[in-house]
Length: 260
Image (cartoon, rainbow, N blue to C red; front, side, top):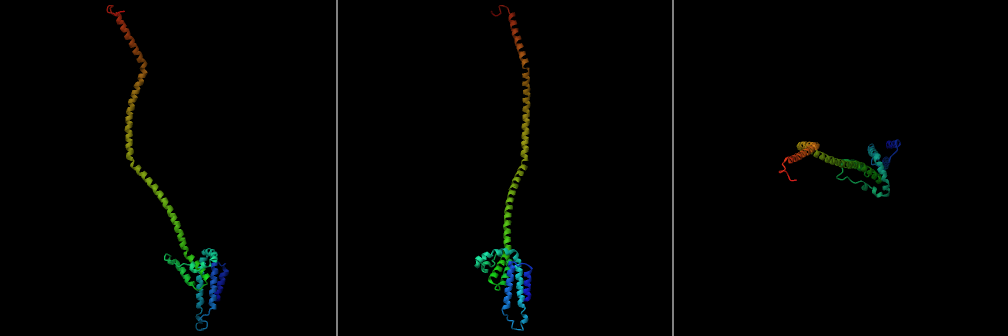
């Protein structure tokens, strides 16, 4: 008994007690005091007095299990317990184990709730109601913390999956458009060749027409250039013919000549 109290005193001196460790020390002190004050059936029997150290060893095992539970939960769950204290002061009825601790449902993981059930069975009926409800609340939150993290991760994964799905649909639509264009380009080779042949034929036809037009144009330009000389030749020819007519008229006899 003295060894247990010294061990608790050393733990208190080594570091500043947190809320969970203060609860653990209070629970251990009450359990030890109740074990000292309550008479045991082996106190008056000298034959069974040698078996009495089994009770302190059981209490030490309970204390060690409680230390492990509270030390593991105090670092992460102390803010949540402190934040629930004003609510507990305003609503003392809501702190009862029945209101704060729901039994595991069929959808819960048995392995995740095994530690909670073991803790509840270990502390059931051995602690005051307020201490028991606080420890059960810490154990309940600790047991369901992984589920909350998993749910949060699933929500993030769903949001990422929706975003990736949108990007996938957009890229797939662009890929389909590009594929259609590629197919059109692959199938357009015969059409392009046919159009080239048509344009070549039309070019040859137009070149022939152009040659005819160029020849005609050259002739018309030549006529225009020789037009003055042609006019002079025609005028001279006309004058010569008129002069020849008058000459023939003068050579006719008077009886045959025209009347003047």
